[in-house]
Length: 460
Image (tube, rainbow, N blue to C red; front, top):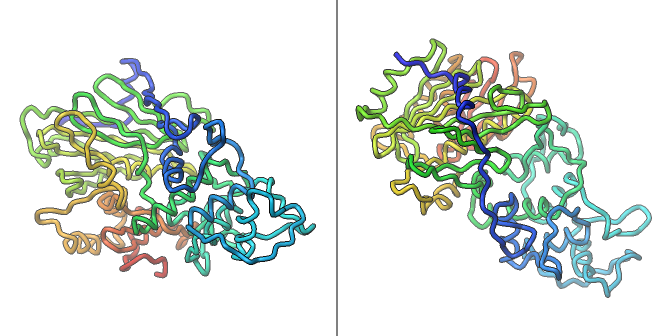
């Protein structure tokens, strides 16, 4: 039998490769092209009348945002009526200032405060922690009353902005930096601030539980193999002959090649087997050999017969799709075990969820709408119903080395909380699936599902 191994794919380097870039088209602002990470957010806010940019036609996305600018975006983004009789006593805010009415209203709503010397200091920059507070207060977010675990590696559960950080994590409002930390102390750029406001507006407008991570990712359409996939802005796409490689490079740890996995790196290899014998997915997998620790799960994903094979100890997860033309799309993935692992795992999950078949090798017309609801479109057709699947989950509770395989069948599952101490054996993650409306308690080190509860909760 033929054996597929992730790291053996290093031979692809002999083909030579080049990172693929996306064509940039001008949008509303000359310095925010269509291929930029925050293009969708900026265009959305511009269309809503929340931002207007500068007289020279630029938005200056990388410029640090100041307190006055942030209030304008916030109050317009929340459609807050600006009329106010509030009397403000900031000596550095005059009625003739363009930002007067925004400071006046924000002061009335008690979402901002002045400095000890009595000034407002409208030109001062605002950091991420401060931004989360004023933004979430403006949106009247239902913050957690208690934070039982550290939301991020560098955000303890007892710090003043922990509730804001936890809410933002749950709603996918912000993402960690490449070192796996939030860095609440860093000054916010205009584009970053706009992105947070946009995501909250998007969630509210579409009545979602959280922001679908892959919504605005670049779309790659294979020119001949009849599939498309979205991938994160921070990942590189490399063509290697018949393979496509998507690589999250760990630059902080000195990684210069995708040939080896580094702590905060990940690779996704995609290749299509023509499947000349027209085998069903089950028959095809019967010819593929993995070692005895591999766990296989089968289901239907995006309307296609689908299987996942996981070797948790090595950070390996492989996915197989039987496409409508009977070709088999194979997705080999591997990720490191560093602080960025949770986010990389989530990104891979969303990537797999965006895979679509394209008969004419063109972008699927329904990609954005299909992905918008949960980040993936999962179909449990035929004999596999929701009830059947949840019964299967219950059968695998407390069974070691079965947890990740189950989670692979819930591509919309996101971590809503992590207990870093766990139960004495290692960190415990709480995964919520909106599709199945359940939360799973998962112990990482033993790859075990400890419990399942209905709804979104970490109170087990």
